[in-house]
Image (cartoon, rainbow, N blue to C red; front, side, top):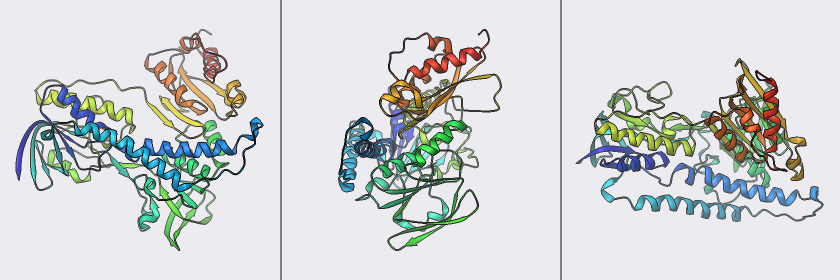
Length: 464
């Protein structure tokens, strides 16, 4: 076994790992990037990019069928499932290729292929061929889809986001387990592409929305396009001819049976930590398998080891993974050089769902028990621009403290991906409802909804 010495060892070559390696190298230390594969980052390969390609195809089919509102007649819309998925994979591979091209320019001595595990708090074994000694290490091993127990004997009839985008053609029917961001995005896209979709979720909300009114609206909106069952639980699954048969219990306690061509497990992802032997490094994994770590400095307790991206299961989205990787790499370089680490203030929380209508959660979460909050609301059903475009569904809820300082909010509606960014920046900058109310808002735009919300907040704050 060859033996190598580095200042910083980065385990994982996804979004967080690449950012950590580059930050450490930019800090002037000798760093190595350990790649188990497959490469290309979760986002580009199996996450945000292929899912958005599927959503775009579904949106195009839906738009073609929905022109009557505008007095335009379109007939004979045909979905070519093989062509949809062929384009998806071609574009996906282009995104993945861009990531790989960026890695290929790294010095060969700075990359090692293989699976890493800790020998102790200062060294790693890479398969059975290399020992890497380090002064600091970054865990950036990403995550893998969770497959619920009842589905584990279905083989390739059970899809995950790691396998969904490899199917040759669209299935005739699909059961989606999970109505969170990933599940409802794919479910709606598949339904719009002509697949008979059933969604089953043990919870009571869709798309992660917690505000009761928005959650009810979301369930009604998405339930009009697919067969949606909340408060339901699958307890058995088996092959059925060429497809699957699921036994589940509804909210009312009645036993149900659903047959479909395939089932998609969209019940979340779990950090890839099991093979690392964290205890050998002196780390203290919790019940969830994640070691105790400082969310500002990303340093784990017990060793000069940091953790970033999906591996720490905290805010597992691309922009957070990239930032965490940079913080971890910079702090790993500091530890390797004997310097103090920096504690970065967290960004304002931002989570988005790219359904139609879109959904988002920003800043402090919905909490009916939180005292001292003032809430402003707007309904998009009668909002000018939303009605013009025929997208008048959903609403917006934003909360502030008694002085009007913005705290957070939830949204369901058109252009939410842009509205959510504006609110995120306002919260991050410490803005008040008055600050936003005093900014110019062009007419007619959906951003005019901000004026209504902020005015309502101001009426409920001190001094108004």
